[in-house]
Amino acid sequence: MASLIEGRTGSWEVVIGLEVHAQVTSNAKLFSGASAAYGAAPNSQVSFVDAAMPGMLPVINRYCVEQAIKTGLGIEAKVENYSVFDRKNYFYADLPQGYQISQFKQPVVSGGTLVLDLPDGETKRVAVTRLHLEQDAGKSLHDQHATQTYVDLNRSGVALMEIVSEPEMRSAEEAAAYLRKLRSILRYLGTCDGNMEEGSMRCDANVSVRRPGEGLGTRCEIKNVNSIRFVAQAIDYEARRQIEVLEEGGTIRQETRLFDSNRGVTRTMRSKEEAHDYRYFPDPDLLPLEISDDWIERVRASMPELPDAREARYVGEFGLSRYDAQVLVAEKETAVYFEAVAEGRDAKLAANWVTSDLFGALNKLGVGIEDSPIKASSLGGLIDLISDGTISGKIAKDVFQLMLETGQEAKAIVEERGLRQVTDTGAIEAAIDAVLAANADKVAEYRSGKDKLFGFFVGQIMKATGGKANPAALNDLLRAKLSG
Ligand code: ADP
Ligand code: MG
Image (cartoon, rainbow, N blue to C red; front, side, top):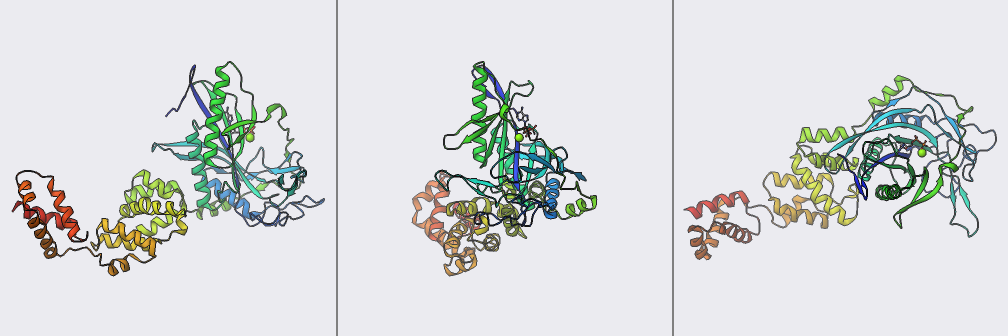
């Protein structure tokens, strides 16, 4: 599925590789016991290690390593038995060590795969090159003082997983789908909260363009974009910019660019010539990281069911459409909610109620499914009333609204307001007789061939019964009466 961009001089193909920094969900930092919680007062979560006091030694946090193993297994990658921590040297005010501890030549995870769910219902597999563990830097605060910059070291030393893809994406949509799937898996695993606004998941997008069939073009890297929508916008802008430069006979300089989300453009941050030489070397304070097969297998045994497997199960077991299944599995909370509703019920009916009525209501209220005013068990109760014929699907919509407004259970609403469906054929017949008697002219017209009037009669009878007549019974009885 080639998605080419038409330039003035012909078609171009966009090539994208993504580097994602995902903050490891963990109470403590990668090499110290200081808290990694977000939003604390500046410099309140800084150990001597994080502040790089002389003589302090890093000690690896076993839990962070386990989170990396879990993530590696979640993206179908190889967890390495042996990996090495290196020093990546550079000078910056918010990096008190003067280097970042990272993994360079021998990362803890290599060679994974992500399955992208594309808008047209297609899927595409994208290779993940590697995942390595590294420390985050502190944060420079430029907005606290007119002429001075403050430094907050709370983030210094927090564990990150850098997850690097092969340059296999071909459009902004594919890049967005990659980020959505990665975020979904991280959240299912509980290894990163995926919150891009708070910076716990950050993305660098590498973009180049080429004529179809040619080798890779020179890339530009757009740094630290903080929402999936902005990543897509940045890629679209950047691809068009590069095409314009090339079509005017120019060349692309390899450089790092920033995305300005207010103006929707990317601009130069630094060129390759100014790029750092990090002088990586193995950190002498840390032993190589050795992970036993036994440990890997124990983690594997504790893995939750991930979105792709769940999607396949919803399609296979429940008979849902791929699209509905995708929507339901994308967020773990939604999948858990849906499964609670579907348990022991008609799964397709449950899927419909969750994806259309409930999602619509939550959207309007601006709340997530975890704060839904209608709990899964209550929505299940409503569906039970439809399935056992107590109310029609149409009345159920009204009951749903009332559930939202009052917080009452479906059953109580139906009883209190007398919304129980009339299945008593005597009562329906009486209503039919009354309507037909009052519309003798239309009955004659119907009998002489004006079939369309059937719907008119149904409407009138439904009105007469307050919408409570069982639709199937009504149809049968009415048809019999009209033909008799
Ligand atoms: P660096 O370490 O300089 O960032 P890497 O080789 O690790 O370079 O690549 C970083 C990212 O750039 C990877 O996600 C990779 O897929 C992507 N990439 C490499 N070459 C290209 C290219 N020509 N066009 C688009 N993306 C590319
Ligand atoms: Mg890079």
